[in-house]
Length: 210
Length: 373
Image (cartoon, rainbow over all chains, first blue to last red; front, side, top):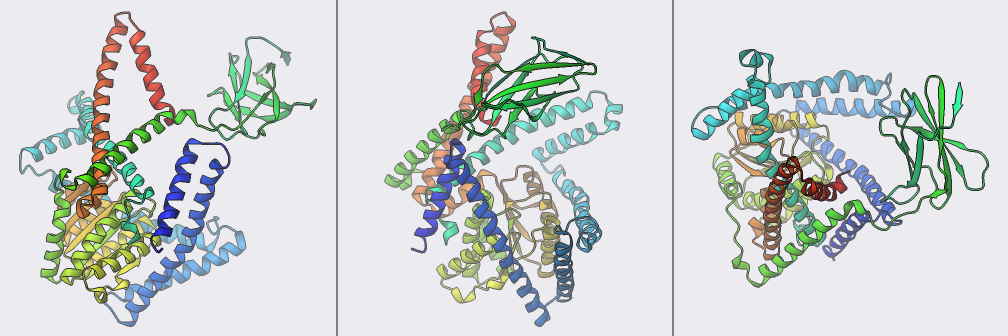
């Protein structure tokens, strides 16, 4: 019973979504929207589970004075700030993200710069990963290095100055040499995803029910 | 202003095809030069007055009247307004909308699903009869799981598992749960700690249950620590920062990056590399694959992730579905080859003055691309 009910729900939901993809007539078109609404409602409640897990984790970390426990204090401060200002802003303006609210002020001046900083770090990580990937250790890596140099130089004005046809060569590498294998991988992924979906709907794949 | 009724500017209205009703498409023809805007009005059968329906896009020359009620009949009138003239056009017959039982634009998709489903079904039956007859090539990334967990155990370090930053609805996330089961079992056997940080609370719950079962199957249910499977945040870079912090503090010996990733993939993989962990990645995000190939020791590329459950379990029904998918892929490759050859020949014949084959080719393309519109 513990497995049969979820399998039945999965089958019915999958069946409804597939049928409504092909049949626009009522009630199928509406059923798909309703299933998605149900998912949104369930997702909302699962956030509570997430918050509960997060708070428990940091409480335990602080109590046991685990390594780096003081970061948990930063978490509690941030959580409290977001929760209190979020509720106040919601009551006052009905949308916490409205410009001028205390919540939005924190979002704009703390969270966005922090996220931008993390994103900016990517440039350094790309440099270090490229250095390793482009080392000419064997013939394959040498081809990769040559292609990468052509593409990188061909994408900047200096490349055009060096040889006016270099951007064309770079584009050819991107649009022909690179595109073929990439499409192959994409077709494989799409077919794999469809096969996996079929396995889930038909109840063949049950790992998620363990 | 001159109000002119001219015959060159005209409109037509028809029930919008392939929908649930409640929409009528109005098309314009011969829009006068220098038209600033086209106003559309409609009249319900029985009414005397036209009411405003909206503005027709000058770029598309079409308007979908989605406020039309299914079953009601309408007459349309359009006013194309230029700087000094108003051109008027109207429909001559009443039009009504009705819901359709089948979306014809998706015929090609249905055909594909039927063929694909049939192959999967046939191969599942074959696999049931002869499970040994189906061969699946080696997946080094899956084989390396034992090595990675073993290495972590020898070093006395934990194992870190990241299931990507997509939700449980993503196929890649579900595939990562399958791989987690195998990792969990090995971790339980070796008595190593596993840390599982999550982006989505639902994935967290599924991961907790999966690991719990894996520990039970390994005969060590008491060793499972639910607190090691936790929710971090649903903010992309907040999650990346959190996982990087865990890597720096806990120094895991093995890191599994399995699931759908975005721009944070390289941030995670490079941090993992910097702490000297053995890294096994797997993703169905094509844009992130090169980053993982550059920074990780083993990578499950795209569809390999979806084949992992069959590879691990060797369950005939799962193996059959992989074989069915492979055959469909082979047929698609063949069709692509035939299509490219036929299209090239048709193009050459068209240049030589025989456009018939190009027309056939375009019709086939139109049929296949219908659903994408």
